[in-house]
Image (cartoon, rainbow, N blue to C red; front, side, top):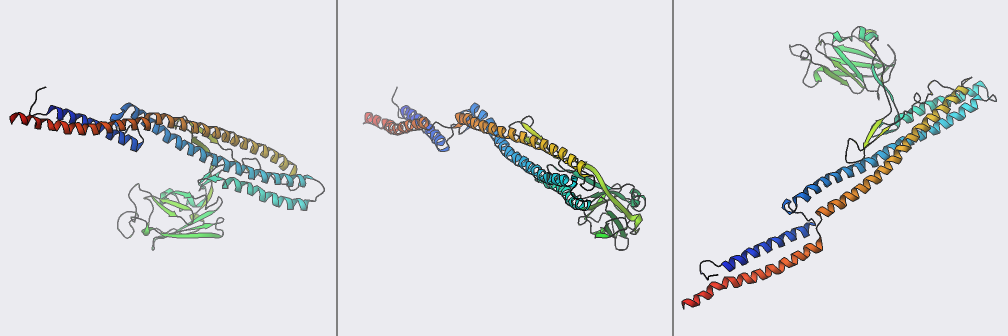
Length: 404
């Protein structure tokens, strides 16, 4: 190799090697400080792709583990409800057996029946109250609707009068109650009164000024027609648990007088059933699932409706209670079976999490001993490179002696 003042090939070579060694050392520092073998995609793109998929699986598995824990809580609550109803049935069986015996009089049977009827209500109370996150688990019931044959719907509250629909909150209102409507065209105030029967005793009342509704949809005080053609407006009497839907036929200039022609009856609507829940217990939310269909435990579900222990009814009630207990035991066995399955599902998920973490670790985690050995080697080479680069930079100065 020729000696030149303009180009120091040795220095350039030393500089290139120094840069490479410094870059390798920096890469080792990044891996050692992060604990990851793959700091950037260039380190191992294929392993990074696989590890990303495993990370998604781990997120799903951890969510599944939480789902299983919550599902277990749901089933335990349901089982507790079944158990409490079973205790009530035991007492009812005692009352029925006592009432069926001839050593007591009919008067005493009436006393026993009073307690029996209270326990009948308690069964429904427990079934309704057994819930998780607002979902009734073993109860059921009926929605509420307006009785289409009640007097009001045939007179002042028809569709042609602007009354498009009525809805009722079952937690506030009950079947058999009546709602009386009145509207004052001078003040634009609609008043609803809940009665315990047709033209019966007042339970509660609420008034709403239609002009106070957002957007003044009936154009009260203006000159246009009430509401846009085809539009409906919900007037929510929240204190009463009643929502009235009015359409563009409603006339704000026509009064509605309270009374029999402005009343509608609340009746039971569609029956609701016990809960039917599906729990995600794995990575695939479509196939990795466990379904639990709870059996209802209301009085109607258990076949105890209309039973009593007064007079000659005690024997029939006792037989009905036996059937109810068998029904309840079947329901609890189904809960127990799913609880057992959830326990195994939780164990499976735990094993999957462990193995997936191990697989991800193999791909992503840095071998500290190996990487630190590489880092130490690069440190030595950097120190040597710096020293050699200094020596290479001295070579042109040696050539100046030729010119002396």
